[in-house]
Length: 427
Ligand code: PMP
Image (cartoon, rainbow, N blue to C red; front, side, top):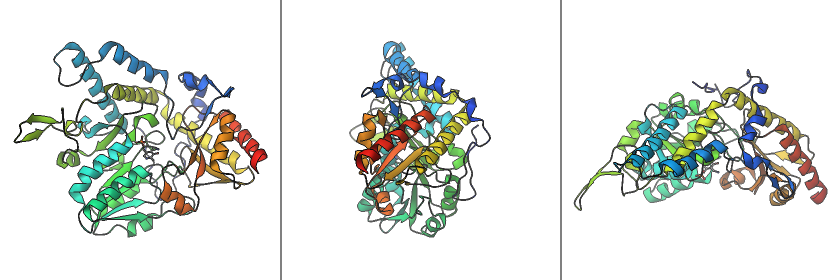
């Protein structure tokens, strides 16, 4: 079983200190990603945008192609051979995800389109059950829009209020302030595992314990957590955990909502249609058991199979060493960027994961991104779907280099060289 960091306080230390980084062969990993070998604008591609979406190893593409070539049929309803095979493969992927998250039951794994859909599902079902007039939904200042807007919609619908726990200037969540905001009207806490804009890793175990001590369930946005830090839902004891396939080396259009069985059982369905029912008449419909109650219509079988293959691929690597590789690269990048005059890192929480967000002189982040692109270096610029966070930090946007398991020191060097070009052009 993976070791989960259980930090005594907000300052999480690096997870993987004891593992020699050389136990991880990054060049071998890179060979699984043909796209990393393609040139871009006549230059070698340096892909530093994995927080937006990761590249996919050929094993994932092959698993999906194999499914379409050999097993494609609709699931659950058929009696024929291919339908049985497709159902086995789809349910096998669910079990694969269960194992990855260390959930107790495969029925606690709901396949959805992605993190956004997972969080909307919780807001529109669990949220509607729990939140009424005058109640409060507690979030943190570093949430992605997809862990803000569904709650805002719920609050508007219910006459409830959003309450926000603040962060400090480094991007560390202020736990005492969070605790102060948990009151008798708090019906739910939504928190990101890892911030996509800052890289802050929140001390989830501690947060969940704080919330549970006051009877408040916790919904975790794991979009950036699952790919980069251990996500053991039983260890965390969170009530819900959401993540997206495409950010963890799997395909787009598939994601996961983990929910504790007792919650999923109590929640009403949110979309109606085929597969989520046991029987339908014009007078009355009885719903299927979980998780099918939440999977109306033909699911994304190929996506689920691709995600299962991605998790197989990822967990076949020496995981501790892979995490150590990412940590080491982040430390290398932090140091390298810190040495660039006029560059300021945004998000300097201790124990960060995978994200180097920065502003550079007063150069517009889009200009930075455009010049880097000409050098083959792909980064993201903008507000990173975290506008309230940008407002809190007093900036409109950042440039963000984000790391995946396949990145190298050489690629960080290429980023630094590109930034020197940016300076020459704009500063
Ligand atoms: N939360 C975080 C922290 C994210 O980084 C993202 C994707 N940028 C999302 C939620 C939404 O994920 P998706 O677009 O895959 O639904």
